[in-house]
Image (cartoon, rainbow, N blue to C red; front, side, top):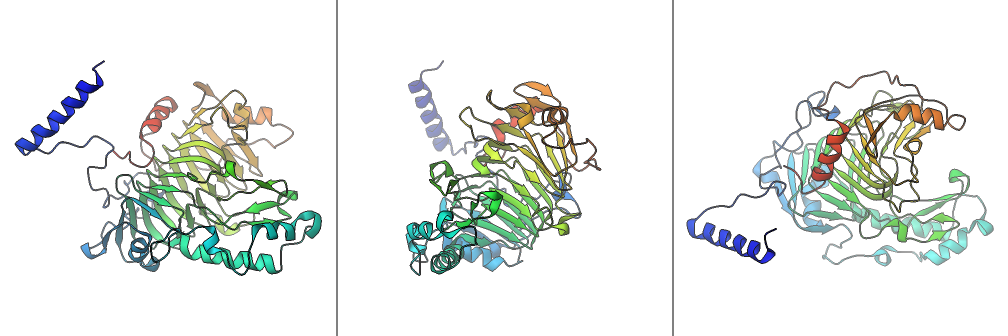
Amino acid sequence: MRPRGLATRRAVQLVALAGVLGLTLTTPAGAESRDISRDTLAADDGWAAADGGTTGGSTADDAHVFTVRTRGELVRALDGGSATPKIIRIAGTIDANTGDDGRRLDCADYATDGYDLKKYLAAYDPRVWGAAKPSGPQEEARRASAAKQRERVELAVGSNTTIVGLRGAVLKGASLQLKGVDNVIVRNLELRDAYDCFPVWQPNTGGLGDWKTAYDNIWVSGSSHVWVDHVTVSDKGHPDEDEPTYFGRNYLRHDGLLDITNASDLVTVSWSRFVDHDKGMLIGSGDTATGDRGKLRVTLHHNQFENVVQRAPRVRFGQVHVYNNRYVVPADAHDYRYSLGVSTESAVYAENNAFTTPGHVEVADLVKNWNGTALHQTGTLFNGYPVDLLAIHNAYNSGSERDLTADVGWTPTLHQKIDSAVKADREVARGAGAGRIR
C-alpha cells in the first residue's frame, strides 16, 4: 500500500501541474461534474415513462433557472406552485424552519395561544379524558401552533418543475408537496428531518390510541408523471428513537419519508436511499379510497431501504413494480415489523430484490398481509440465499393471515434491464442516494 503522505504529495503535484499547463482535471464519477438539471426520464424507465413520459422543467428558459441557497430564495423560485417550466438548483443546506429574516426557528417560536406540551398531556391523559377526540383550549392551541409551522415547512411544487441538488445539497425540515400536479422531477438531494412540533393525540387509533404526525419529506398527492431519483431521505437530526413515550405510545415526530396517495399515478422512484425511519413509504390513501382504483402505478427500482421499520412500501390498490431494491435491517433493529405490505386490492410485482437481516428477522417477517390477496415474487435473495418469499409467507403465516396467490393480474413491461439480486445488491450499495449520479 502506498504511504498516505506520498499519495497526498502526488495529488498536490498533479493539481499544481494542471494549473501550470492550463489543464482541467476530470471530476470523479458520482461528483456531479455534468449538468443534470435538464435531464429527462428515459423512455423505458418505469411507470413515469408512460403516456408521454416525465420531463420536469427541462424546457425552462434561462429566466426560470434558479440556484437557491436560502428558504426565501427557494420559496420565490417555487413561485407558489405555478406550472411555469422551471429548474431549481439547491446549493448548500436550506432549513425550512427559518424566518423571513433568516433566523432559525424552533418549536417554541411556533407555539401560540398558550400551547404547552405538559398541559396538553395533562388535559388529554386517557385516564382523565377518556376516549373522546381531543377538544378544548389546549387542542385549539395545538392546532393554531401547528398551522404556524405548516406555513413555514410545507413547500408547494408546481407542474413542469425540476428540483436538483448541487453537490452536498440538503433540504432540512421541509415537506415537499406535490399536490394535484403533473410532470415533476426531484433528484440528487438529501432531504432530512420533516419534524412535526405538534403531534396530535388520537385516542381511538389502533385500539390503544396513537400519536399522529403531519409531514412527509415528499408527499405526492393526486399527481402524475413524477420521477424521484438519487435522493437520500431520513430523520437525521431528530431520530424518533430519541423521543419519549406518552400514554404508552411512542411520541413520533415524523410521518412518511415518501408517500404516494390520493389517486397519484405514473411514478418512478429510483436509485434512492431511505434510512433510519419507522413508516417509510405508503402507496395508496386507505382501504376505502376507491378513487385509487386504476391509479397508483408506481415503479421502485434500485433503492436502498436501510433500518426502515415498516412500509417499504405498503401498497393499496396500485400496480407496483418493485425490482432490484436492497433492504438492510441492522443487528440492533429489534422493532422491525415488515418490508412489503400487501394491502387492499394491491398488485405488487416484486423481482430480484435482496434482503440482509440479523438472525432475529426471518423470511416470513418480510411480508405483511393487510387485507391483500396476491403478491408476485421471483428472484428474492435473503442473506445471500435464494428464497421463495411467497411460499414461505403462506406457510409460516397460515392461520394468522390468509394466503396470498401469485396472480396479481398484470406483468410489467415498462422497465430497464433487471439484474440478478446479487448484482443489484452490490450496485445499489455503491450507487444509490444523493451525490452518486454517474
